[in-house]
Image (tube, rainbow, N blue to C red; front, top):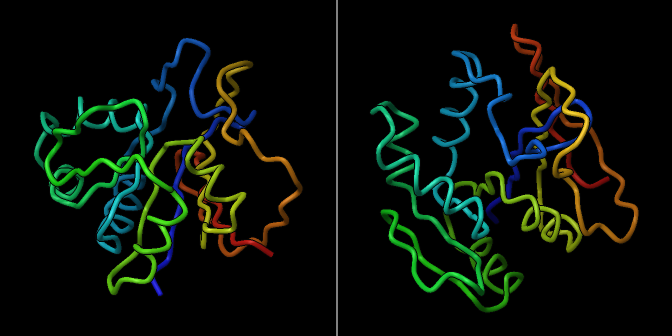
Length: 180
């Protein structure tokens, strides 16, 4: 069975975006690129919510060409939304029906990992349903003070088990968890 991996960047105080929706505080260097490239090479489907999809679809088709851009643009993408009418980014398809049903179908199919990038509401929803096999929290060495919290909509305690830590020279720490 395929794994669903959620990978999200977060500030030390728990926000995935700043108060004005800014993301300019993410530390993106060669080590981070190596992490991202490895993760994308182990995946063959990306999952997005509508908001993250719009940001990614606006950036990646025109991004400087490298292995990450090639993967982001070529991998199949499933976009969960009841508000979007269509998706136009290469290899994207829109799903407006049951998220759990669609993710269950994807997990049953043969293939590589299924990765949720950003999409904090979608990630929290899947985590609460027990559909996330690995949760990677990429802690950036910055305090934002306010913004949008990474984990929303969690209605009960979910115990996690630490699988791995990776400390980058930049001070970024990648924490990998699974449900305990």
